[in-house]
Length: 142
Image (cartoon, rainbow, N blue to C red; front, top):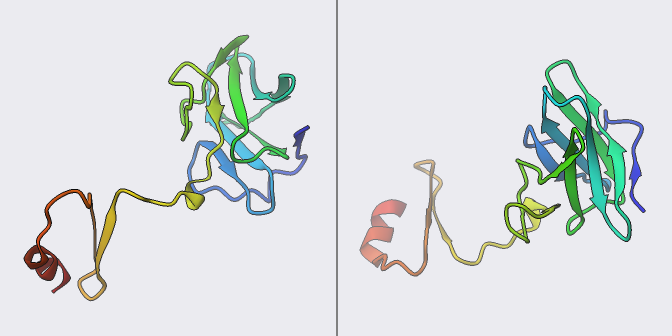
């Protein structure tokens, strides 16, 4: 069962809000919600469990949950009402279902190709189904 960490100073965040898996395990959760009187994180597992979030003076609420990682599902409970995370990176059951922790660093891109010209500082993404001729690629890379 996931446990809430008592120290949040060891968090590593790349995005200001949402669920972010941590390098040493667990997941950092952060949501901006300055108005609700009550806000908890609800982890879906064998049984739902409410986890208190710590609110700062700017209205950001956060917690680190040990044992929660990619594939774990969760909700935000705002003033008693379950809501998906507005900064969720994965909603497998659609916009009204629980949010699921995703690790963007582990995603393998399958439907894009990278065209890189380091000398020009150019990085371009293209859908490989497009008809990009070798002449176009030569221009990008030169």
